[in-house]
Structures are given as C-alpha cells and as structure tokens.
Image 1 (cartoon, helix red, strand yellow):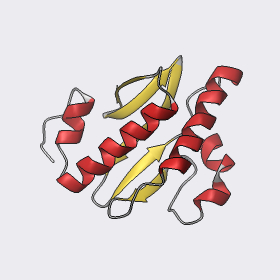
Image 2 (cartoon, rainbow, N blue to C red):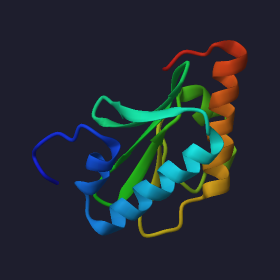
Image 3 (cartoon, rainbow, N blue to C red):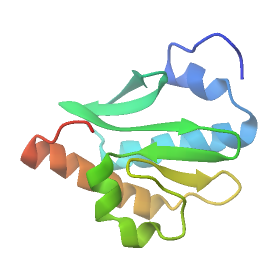
Image 4 (cartoon, rainbow, N blue to C red):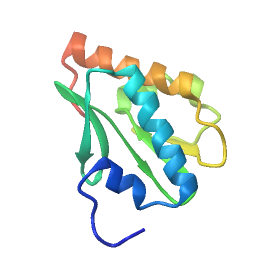
Length: 123
C-alpha cells in the first residue's frame, strides 16, 4: 500500500494489489445495488455508504475484505455468518473466494431498513 492517504474511494481501491481491488470493487457494486440512492465516500479512511446516516463501511486487508454493517446487522444474520470470521460489528470475507453477494445485499438491505424505519444510528 502507498503511504499517502487516499482522498477518494477509487484512490483507496487503487492502493491495493489486484486481488484486493477486485474484491473491493465487487463489494462496492454489491452494496450500491442494495442501497442505490446512497452516497459513497471515505469515512475514517475507508469506503462508506451513507443515506441520511452512515449505512456501512468496508475495507481491505492482506487476505480478506471486511464489511462493517453495525452490530445489530451482524447479530441479525449470525446464523448466516457461521462460515465467516466475524466480530460484533465486522464480517471478514476471504479475497480468494467469491463474495457471498446475496448475503451481503441482504445485510445491507437490513441496515438500510434500520435507518429508514427506525432512524438507527451508526454503531
């Protein structure tokens, strides 16, 4: 990774090796499909989608891409996430395996509904 901090999502993605770039672009497209009216930008140095509030963020690491959809979303989908490493607020997807796009869209749709129906805050 380049030491200069990126100022755009494209710049963030470009700082990673090709495998990570592919996974990040797929994550972005999958989240965009789930929240088409949201805005994508950088929050805390990582890509984030916002609509009224921050919906979710995502980031790349050496061998995986993480989705940060909020603890409520991780808890809601805990049974679906048994094959993935997760914490209370993050889910890791290995870069060498296909992203579970349907699951990611379901998680993103849940988070969007939380914001729209309950004005749920970020974390």
